[in-house]
Length: 190
Image (tube, rainbow, N blue to C red):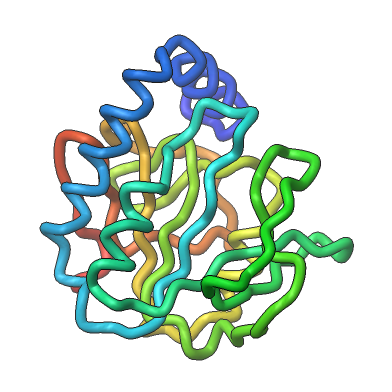
């Protein structure tokens, strides 16, 4: 079955079987695969920070790459309105862990989605058309719909893409690229 709820359950359970060493190994491989993408000419890069309570992609290796390339890094914060706000990550940014174990900025320089060049998108799995299964709350679909058409969307998954996600909606915003520890996939004609 390739419906989102079933895929969330299946791939969430698979991720839960990985040891911390495997998670770290796969996360480093993902970051290295990102280096092969044609996405490095921009200035503003949006990166989700990793939950301390979930077995998900660790974005620390990707954060280190962005810092080494002198990119401006933007991180999200979940607001009560079920939307994300976006903050420039600086040396003085105070991060506090939210109810999902995700570090979030408490204050700082708010950034408009209109200036973001590249967004790294958290997800469970994506399909061969660039559609994705996220965490199910719609935060990223609402956020991505506010970004310019030119903003590059890069999904990060531990798993190779599946042929098709059956229950896509008109609100789903597809990826431009998908990245796994083994390779990269281009969807948007980039």
